[in-house]
Image (cartoon, rainbow, N blue to C red; front, top):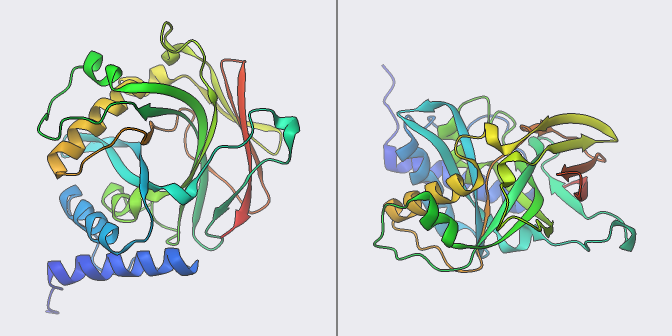
Length: 270
């Protein structure tokens, strides 16, 4: 029987492989090691990769695990400052921003509500009510998350693998302020994702567990458990409202919210 790889060495090897591939833009055709058996192992890879990665973490994505794994129904991954783009609110002001993806890896676009942390949470606080989580947010915007990984099979192998490569995040397009969010219920807003002028997905965030503010609550508790401090000004990408929609180089992506807001981008090779 072949010897099993040392867990610590396996974690370090996976982390190094993904960080190097993300720096160079190279593909990772096969998963680079033993697949993490648990979410804990997946986050151990993510933590090791964060120590190796350049850049400032300016936000966190929250995605759904469906069906849940070991009772956990969400996952998280870092979003780096140099991958966050805030284009002009007026589409006529210029061409849509071009967002990079790994051409030989996995690439998708997701319509999401983006919530900004206004108050740094107490790192010792481990449980939040929905009202407490909502009070931590000082802004809500519409946006697009770019999901991309140098490993094309990242989603097919399950959430432990998704977690291991930064949660499959590769950028964020921050659109307009979602005016009315303080006094209204954004869970009921219709959301659409269009690719090359074709409607690809439509839904509301009412179908997403306990919605965008629930995603913030999960992140606050999750990061406290991991011992990672969140800070004011960081963004939370709260989950794909209409689903995870594959994209290709040259595609035009538009997310529409409540018939009032739209955010655009195009897709380019990393």
